[in-house]
Length: 338
Ligand code: 13P
Ligand code: SF4
Image 1 (cartoon, rainbow, N blue to C red):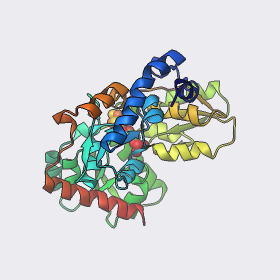
Image 2: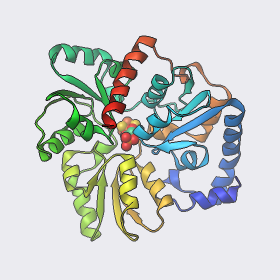
Image 3: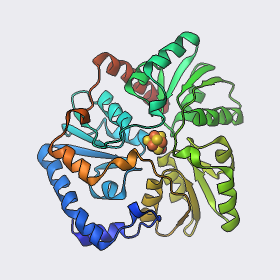
């Protein structure tokens, strides 16, 4: 790739944040890093998976696969390289390791947490199981391997409604996202599905920032505005949205709208950046909330991890935990395919 080619890809992205402001000079500075990463990938037989919330130069410059949690967990089952470098957060690296125990999985970011995954431990889930022995335990994919190992079925933002509806039980404990859980309860009511759903108290610190006033303000300034939100947002935000869906579902929804449509995307700013690049015929306004964990991935730390991976950057899991967590993820693939 030349600096000009990279510039042509990135110069269309202007969501407003300094982090995503690309000049030719910035592209020239990034190019040696991108070329060295792409060369090392070949030499060391590494594949890079990057979540859509990572910085655009990672998604467009070095990633082999990009997408949302569900797509990336499916991609992780298909790769042939002996090492997976996951530009995302730790729970996603753990998911890749659960599905690919023989592969070396590397996580480069210095901030590898997630406010949802960090809100509950496996020990807390096991205590809840004693309190609710007759309930089916459903966990969001944004959880540690130990939490998945203690639950019955995993879900992503893209398949959660379908799976909760089709589970052959009417008693569910859903962990850890309280806001997504409330959105599930509301959606089940709309569908006329009777389920008792017990919630935990976690939330995504990025998505919880949006509120109805923000939507009302932008609508008043932009007639015809289409508001799209993620199910990790407040139910009051979901209720005012034209569409609620996972990262991948939002991308499909936008693709199907007529050229010239105007969108307010209530999700992490990485998706805004990608939509600016992929849909120059559409208009994207407003909100730009950044996930510090996802954005702590950089070309510099990906390169450093490829050159000399440190011990903590290798994802390692206890084999019993891995096997139990895999059952939980396999249950998700089973119900998602029904
Ligand atoms: P999806 O990738 O499933 O849309 O989830 C968003 C998210 O917050 C990932 O951490
Ligand atoms: Fe976690 Fe929210 Fe960041 Fe996703 S956006 S990694 S849910 S803190």
